[in-house]
Length: 218
Ligand code: SAM
Image 1 (tube, rainbow, N blue to C red):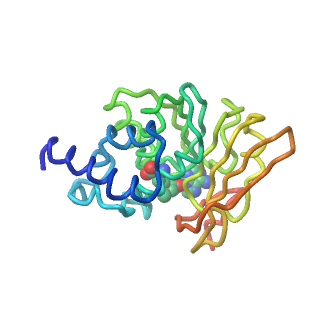
Image 2 (cartoon, rainbow, N blue to C red):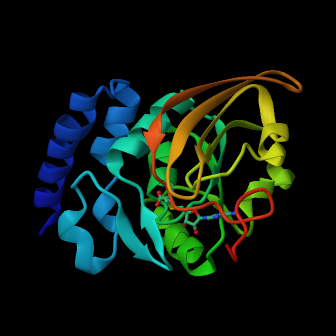
Image 3 (cartoon, rainbow, N blue to C red):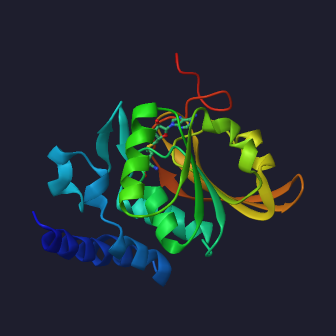
């Protein structure tokens, strides 16, 4: 497939899978029309890049389905220049969507091979990102506080470090539940140590493994 064919499929995906399911913020829809998802999937899966489903990216991990990436992006209410921490950078696609809206992104990824590939791909699109290899359940204290935090792996509970590293007025979007099914939760930090949260919908993510997440050995 060439660039023109991918562009056609990309636009079709936006109307068939995002607009039709209620994604409506123009800046989110524009980001999905702009960022080439095929760049973030392995060569042998590129033909499926615009289907609305997660795909394997190696190391037992996945690039999330486009609809859930769009929903989480919309829930974050991303503003230009927002400082966003993404826990679970994986392929780099979600980060590229946030960057294309104009946010500054700090990514934490557990797998070094994924982090390295994600960084290369994001740089190829001429965006700047800082990625740390490590346990994102502890956030990234060095650059805190963040206006927004997005966690793209399933947590057993809200990680305390992430709540602490969120700015007052900031938003956290995170799947919370069992290792096999979760609720997507949107948390808002009203004041220091005062939060409101609401469950948005059911979802299924790979587990968030770390000190404030799941135990690797389980
Ligand atoms: N946002 C990614 C994308 O756009 O491709 C999808 C991420 S995938 C569903 C979840 C990612 O979380 C995996 O790459 C996994 O290695 C990572 N992960 C799991 N536990 C982690 C942790 N404690 N810290 C950082 N990354 C973690």
